[in-house]
Length: 195
Image (cartoon, rainbow, N blue to C red; front, side, top):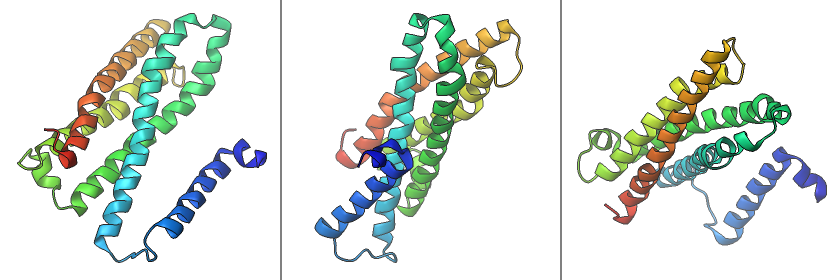
């Protein structure tokens, strides 16, 4: 049992096996791979799962890592800047990308992608959430990530440029944190009448 939890891959596989067992025991006896409704559900589950990773990492950066960095002794900071942050930023970027792909796929499968993006009723809440998510993903890939590569020394940059890049990345990350609050609300409001 201990070896199961010492490997992230084995832990995730165990989680998927547990999910499969729950579906078999409690769920429908037949998973219909040709059912449009079943695939919509799968895309929604995947969308929510990767969105949790994305927003969870966003909030980790803003609620834990950024505020903690000034309290970390200089000799220990490379553990964050050279090891933890690059790894977290990898999962952060690709969780953002997967969230957008799954979300747009879900909206397309449900037939509301264009009305939602145009903010037409009755898809205004989900449309607002989609636009906020798209802005956040743009920020991740085209502002935060390029600035973090400079700030973390992954690409050459002078010291003043690194400091500026770190500041721009932090402010943009804070903007995304701010946007994540109404984005999550709008995503949930669409199906549950919150707007």
